[in-house]
Image (tube, rainbow, N blue to C red; front, side, top):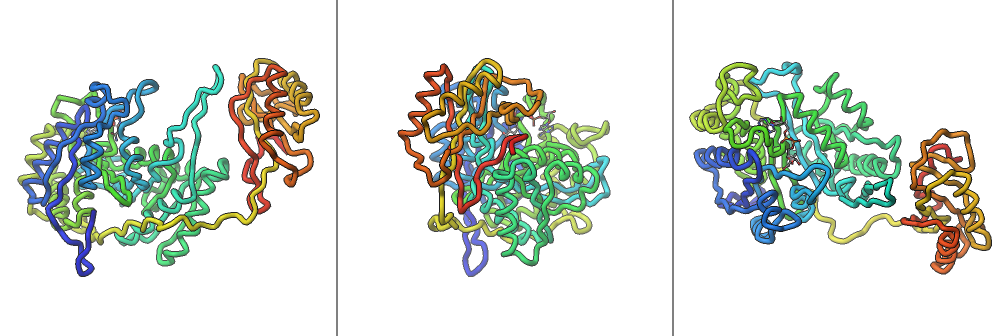
Length: 493
Ligand code: NAI
């Protein structure tokens, strides 16, 4: 972690946990280490495993304890890509590492590079996506609730949004960038995506010199293609940032060029945006640039600004000189394998790129860890009802009458039933293609002051079961400071 002495970053020999990873990982890691060594970076490596090797050794999380211990000691890692089975099998070891070390922000810069010709060349693309990194759909809370329906919780905290927002503004400040856009889907997901928008707007007030804008994420994707040069920093929630940052990589030449940093209070994990590229593994064909630029971000994080500039400068000069280049950016010209391209970069160490390609970086201030949880809590918090999620095969009017009957004699009154979010009872004439998963909204008959007791709840659930209805999830309908903390179903009045 960056330490300061007399206001300046103190440079010490740093031991870095090195996770070569899967697929092309070991090849690009080898090349990057060779370049950093030749550039005189003050680093020592401690090798560690994660991903496929760990899964094969029977470690279900994909992250061995030795690796966790190494990162806990060193606080910094350079990581190759880790393969995750798609649609089945173990959880992503990448996400596990990010979450275990609470790396709450993911920084993904892209900019036009010399010699890399794309349909967007000449537009002046130079932007950073800052992505909240541990929450959202990546909370990884998934359940098969009925034979027909699975659910993934989109979990967003105001604290997580605030930390990510602060990181985005601190990054803008450290890199002399004049604006931050937050891109959300707050029009549809008012509570979750809306929370990111609201926290961003609060934090923005502390950075008056930086312009703050909001865009809907779908428009942001469109704007990134139409006029990408308008963006300097884009802040998003986790899933949106995952997608948008692959898009921004594509704007400047592809995943082979896109670096990233996972930043937390305790730890920084630096890795390419791309995955294990199984199609290229073992062929000496992968572009090492993404991981190399990730290592440059790491050097700056460690306060080694000069050597970071030296490595970045050599890369820019090498690209500017033209072929042979890695196949993904050679556009049919002469190609260089991973090792040969790294050797070219080493040969150019000490050369300076033309023009103003090297930005002046200041140390980024990682937002302080909140010392204690002192947040604005609502003065009043009441429960006004209950959503009960029920499994049922049949028609809306049938489940409707079963529920009406079940509620008789309880403090609850059925307000509506929705199926995948659309009101189907009372009948509004919707043509919903119903599945076996029903959200049944009961309100407290006598209003929020009515006694919402566990006993009353048990009474209602017992009546549902007597009527042959299997429930699988309960959700209290909260009202904070008089404002409903739940949304209406589509079509609910
Ligand atoms: P991928 O990023 O591995 O590959 C996508 C495309 O980009 C492929 O055509 C590949 O050849 C190309 N590409 C990627 N890196 C390149 C490089 N350095 N040089 C030249 N071309 C490169 O994504 P994919 O195929 O969707 O995922 C493969 C595996 O990687 C999966 O198991 C996935 O879960 C994992 N993954 C891991 C990540 C990480 O460790 N942070 C991130 C993304 C995916």
